[in-house]
Image (cartoon, helix red, strand yellow):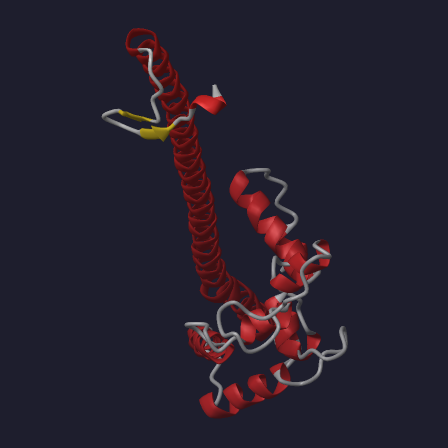
Length: 260
């Protein structure tokens, strides 16, 4: 499929997106957490954001339990379509036998990449000869190629596109949550700063008030002492006698002549 579609050299946005997907899918470089974290050395958590069970790798995308469609659903649907297309060409096969044979081939180990199955080749759009040459018949070969194309397109449309949509929602939710938490922290910081400023302002005002009161008290005391001394001197001059006590409306001072 890759080879056939690459003959179309149109450079529309749609074709470019298709081509980009096919290449990344073939190289297993679709944007998964495993790929993202390889680029970002500070992150090492590859846990799938949807099922929270396995690492989010290329293989896991197609096998995740949170997918609305399973690989079996897509394969089964394409095999049934394959059988119907063969009937239209007057080629009749036993439905159960045909399905079992195809599924058995799909579940065999891939000869292209270790730890993968032939079904993974189909997801990438690779034409496996064991499928295309099941029968030495041109019509069957054409329909088997369509079967592989159907699996490749079906996994993209029903699994990958859904995957991207849900991952985008999850990432958007996480980003919004981070932004909310950030705003909360900023608000808390501002409130804390404002509270500290208010507290400092109040403490400063209280300190200034105390200083003012102390200064006023000292000034009043000096003033009263002067007033009393003036009265005492005036009394000495006018009365010409010793005074031991002077009464004021505010203070009583004991003043002796020896201290003058």
